[in-house]
Image 1: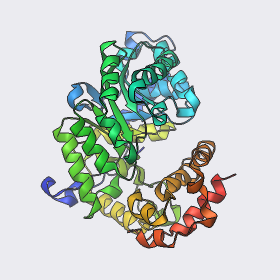
Image 2: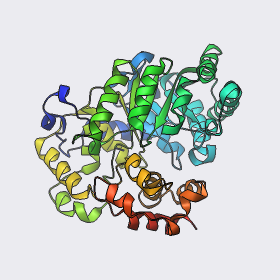
Image 3: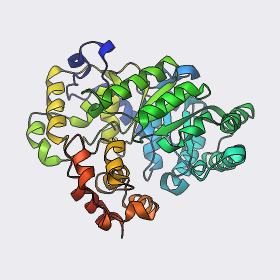
Length: 415
């Protein structure tokens, strides 16, 4: 489900106010109606949707729902249908999600509901990681064609380079890659293109995407933990400014920032009626540079709460204070992704990446995927028993117990 800070944007306290936990009855009712819609989807059924606000997605010029649906989990066709008829019309998927099954489920539902033209559909390519160059078009098109077949459509609205990393920045300046995407547009197989990223060098990647000139949108990790502070947060904010100035469509993911972690730290706040997940997603919508939040909603409660949050994006000072309290008390337990600091000290161990995989395993319940990703890392990255991580721990600006966390990740993900 489910953050912004810069000197030009005014009072930071106003930007980080949080919503009251009342979930609007209107959107809940719309969801109930959507779930009750008959299997024969005519014009009347299409009209059943919550009034989710829309935003113009950067240079694409397309109006999209500000709430998007993430699909990197085992999708239920009835849940996808409920989201569509509740007004969620931005869907983000990938060939890698559930080993292509997510695309197939989406394709079946979108075809059956006859809602393809109502949905802004994004999918992603992972084969580029093996290198492209002169073979860029062949690589991208072959994987895209397979995705289109699973999605049961002849085009996607946007096609991404998925999970691009800092050491791949040169790809954004590669004329062969640019030409490949332009050819896919010419053929009508994609309308727009972009990238997704949660790499430690995110500010550099956002800047490169803005300067490349041919990209239309980017999806990146952005949450309430990125709001405050100086130093590296300023680099991210400047990069977001540059991307916004280039009129890139800006889509936020990983917007919870560990808001579902550390239940022992939340007990007192929950007793006060604080709903951390809803507060977290609202911090991102307060940033008027961000057009869409892609949320991995896995149940109808998540869907109702997020839809309700779109109706009233104002945040109370009380909830802002409570989320800030939560951020402070858990900052030393949550990896913020600034791997360029600890990984330089760790000499080859991608600490931030390993801890992200640990979060997939422990928090998101994606145990098989987390293990597969971990075991695909180079041997030097997984040789943690021999690694001296003392310097990495000292380099962490948030005081994380890096040694303990990385060793825990190894014990869970190696098997």
